[in-house]
Image 1 (cartoon, rainbow, N blue to C red):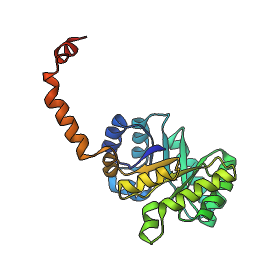
Image 2 (tube, rainbow, N blue to C red; image 1 turned 120 degrees about the horizontal axis):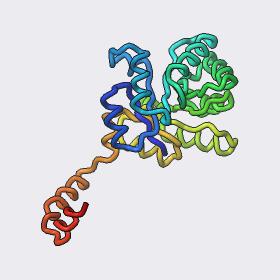
Image 3 (cartoon, rainbow, N blue to C red; image 1 turned 90 degrees about the vertical axis):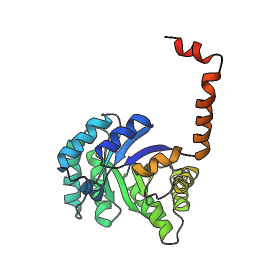
Image 4 (tube, one colour; image 1 turned 30 degrees about the horizontal axis):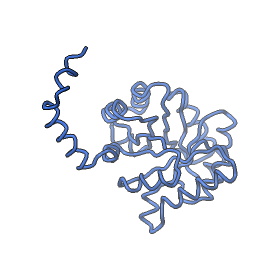
Length: 225
């Protein structure tokens, strides 16, 4: 499973990209609005930070097919290579996806809550579908099970669309979608760092640090160029 960062905070993106194997960034209007930075400048700076090889997924905000397509094309020009327009799985969004596919614009189908929404989006040409895991869990559904069903559907119908799981509140949800076969997951910065945290790891590192200077090889290793 590939890891993406769900953020528009430049400091967080720069710090986590440096530390972890993150293959891209996802954003939406709510995330961008929190930064209080002009939109075009923010997108350009995100692209500069992550480089040209990582993916950048940006949410469209229009609700008519023509306007969605126009917005997505404009976003592609701003975001550069490896860009994917995030388009909701509404009737207007599905129409826009089919047209964007013909134009060669990458598409991530968003606001996915059912298996059939995902399958229709895939047939419409979406490169990714983004099921919202925590929001499903919050309505007494099972987000990871929905992800597993979508992965299975894509396999049995031989579709190239990938599952980009989104909307997480805890590490267990991320783990469950990885076990369900999700191809990617996009995770908020505060949760991302919890993926590698465990108190026993910290205890082990503390023991290594305490015992390291007493190791006979320690001083030799430290003196090597």
